[in-house]
Length: 387
Image (tube, rainbow, N blue to C red; front, side):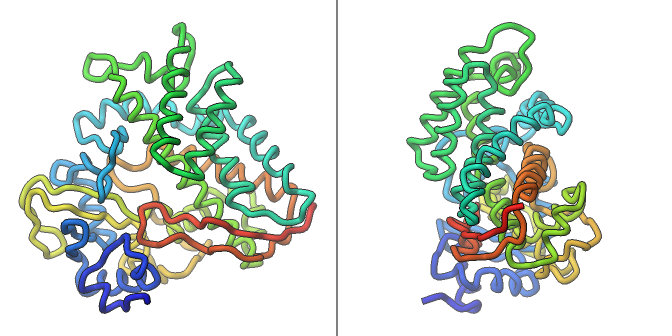
């Protein structure tokens, strides 16, 4: 039986199945009545629910450390997500170049080929499961070809399969396989002329020294975690709106729709619900006293539904005046891969709408559990007409 809003507010648990149905409503109440909400779950932590408080946390890494960004812990390093200054700056300094829009657009045609290959598998059927038939193969295939940037096609294909398995299964074994392939790919890096992420990991220095093996694998792991479920989830959520609201398709057919409308999709369907921080010294936040060592769940989803920041926050309004939101995070940890995500999302729907139209919802789980860090539907069946 699902717990009521009142019951949730007494002791919220962001991972509890019996709280998921009413969690969004509970967070809305918390933003007004108890914006820094304490719980005894998982050893005790505070849920940061308001946009301004989330921004305060994210913009002050000296007070709110990212050293352990998983509320229940992360068994491996996820660099630079788990890095604080000055280490964080060193990692971002060399990674930013490889995730600039200009650099990533060199992969555009290959990503379009991946999208077309996936579409070719279902276009004659008149229906698809957006998750398995399109979002997973497209996002995993694109990411694999950028992370495993190599002329070794056998390695690329094994990388695509391994990343695909991570996207579907997300087990320690699947991540271990990707790590093994990343090590194999890095071993192939030769010569000063190669310019891609793996080459950077092999040649880059941090504070005057080469990266350790743990750091290299930590970066690869972060790229996978940040680039798989997030993009996959957003493709699925946008596809649901495409199939259930007739006014959406004309918007997605508008050139450069991703300049404005995409930000509203990102705000409304924030796929990374929260991440954790640790308080480094006694401080005050939102009228609540915090002590060194306290754990926080920085709730980006809740921040993006804050009525003090966004008018009518519970409505998807694609004509909403553009205002920065927390979908990609805030501050120094703003998502490294946001340009990659935007390019992928634009390509995914440009290629899909070039071949299909008149999408209709046929069934499936509409959304993942809102409280978990990555809320992605497991399946979404749509029918369509071929163009």
